[in-house]
Amino acid sequence: MTAVDQTMNICFRSFPCLSDPAQRSSSCLKLVLLLTHLIYAGVLFLFDGDLVEKTKREPWFTALYLLLFVVTLGQYYAISVSNPGYVVDVMKNFNKKNVVHKKTPETTNQPASSKNGSVVISIEGSQSGKNVAGSNATHWSKLVSELYPPGSTVRTWTCTYCNVEQPPRAKHCHDCDKCVLQFDHHCVWLGNCIGQGNHCQFWWYLCEETAVCIWTGFLYLSHLMAHITMVWWQDAIMILLLIALSISLIFLLLLLLFHSYLILTNQTTYELVRRRRISYLRGIPERVHPFSKGVCRNIYSFCCSYRFEPIPTPQEIEEKSRQYTCSDVATCRCC
Figure 1 (cartoon, rainbow, N blue to C red):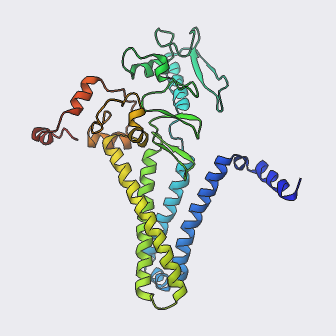
Figure 2 (cartoon, rainbow, N blue to C red; figure 1 turned 90 degrees about the horizontal axis):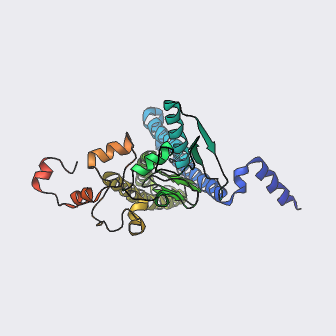
Figure 3 (tube, one colour; figure 1 turned 135 degrees about the vertical axis):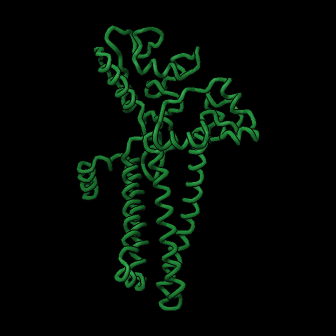
């Protein structure tokens, strides 16, 4: 074994996450993002003497910028380790709370699955954790069955990968190997899923990142306009960084607008992109958003009060398909 191999083995033993190629790639991307932010801030304070002087005269200006800078990075790393709403965790907590409330004995079995293990929670005396027909069904199974149309089978809402009963809008993430409530997408830069548990945080992070980029770009432009002919190599570095920042800002603005649209219409990225492949969305006109409850209520639900959403009935779909009239606008039907 070479010295390089021995060093790598020591690193893998000290940091187990580095032994996983997916996590190693995510860790590298996080490091790249951190270094990129530090480079932009470092070049700005290193080359812009006027900003340093302004900081001495008006420290609040630089303090606000650095505060936004730190909060943005903190939000990024907080989301990267946050729980997006794993169905297994929610299912355990839900059954535990209901068992404690009703003082019903409960046993938990965890048979092995493909990677992370499936979890079947059953009450003593029941024949199966997936039996939803009778009184022996678990509390979670009863909840999930009530969210689907009558006549739906257990196979309809059971994940074929981890054998967990999924509420509507949940999906199995193959990168995390877990089912996620209201799955939006798996973010490579974060190394984490975006779902019901952290989608709001993700939107705020996009706002903060966009604000940092705009503020940084403004400071770069101010310096270049005042010192464009001073030191050519410094100007060249700042111009290149400003071009890269402008491209990143365009993507950030588009992403922020896209997710804002999803929030206003109560959709997810997965539902929008894979609409024709999702059973409960198949056959519904694209302009109809079946889970939308109006702009105001969608925002409130997204930010403050998440609830499990049942699949809309045909009557509700027909009502949502109806064109807005002047009276609907006057009565705030769209809100």
